[in-house]
Image (cartoon, rainbow, N blue to C red):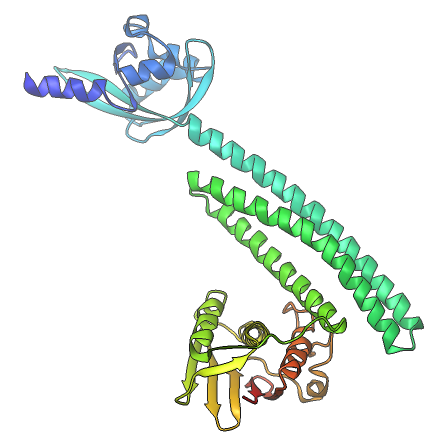
Length: 394
């Protein structure tokens, strides 16, 4: 008796709906959760065929399902489970996962159905689809707008460049390009980034790898465009003479370790950035922002132009002459014919292929280093890697 009472208490308080039917499909029992789902009182459905809880076409074929199973022994739902639709008393339809088990009791067969309401999950899924479609449309629209803007700016640059004879006129063109790009890029990028973050929050309700993959692509594209925009803005400030070193005293080891951790997060698979400091001193006085931009740019290039499963060496040294910073990789290298143009704005080596970039990074690094009275040099061989060395007097 105690076991029976315990079993009844479990069934009566179960979160999911539980319905039992006989071998003719008539409802024998229904727990409160199932009553709530279908909006029926127990006496309204007990004794009736369970098909009363089903919309068409399942309503018309349910008895056939039972007879076929009893005749062939091949289950359609029993012991398998599937997503089906339920019909409420008010005529509305809702989705649920149905699991049916067969029980032999007192010489007869009883079928027990376990009902898990999927309404909230389906609603969340529909919201995700809606937001994904909305975001896809926004991305397509913004991408097309940006493409048209870039194409228009490129045409303008080519037309004006053909008629320009002085470097001053070319610099003015670059400034106009940067100003327009700053306006055209930042607003759509912020909108896309915000939409991606919101959709990522919705994915917490569902485990959907495709949604996660596309969100990752959106974020990656936004980061690439943001990096391009930052290069243009940095160049504009340098051209306008708005960049002045702000010196401060700091620990180069701690400073470099933080950069290493930051860049390791964006490195390729199994790329390892190895940092090492040489010398007993670690306190220097330089512009932290300019130095960080230089190092991040060089390490970023090292990871970009090196393959997976490679090492990036990042070393700092303080000696009698000052601070020396070295970043070395084993990547694609720089062709000898391109090396004399390496620090020119908008120049990219011929072996970079489809690897994204603006051709501004090294030009900006060179100018930042010069602002801090430093020097930059490099050594490179095709397919054997590149080493950049920055030197600053202390």
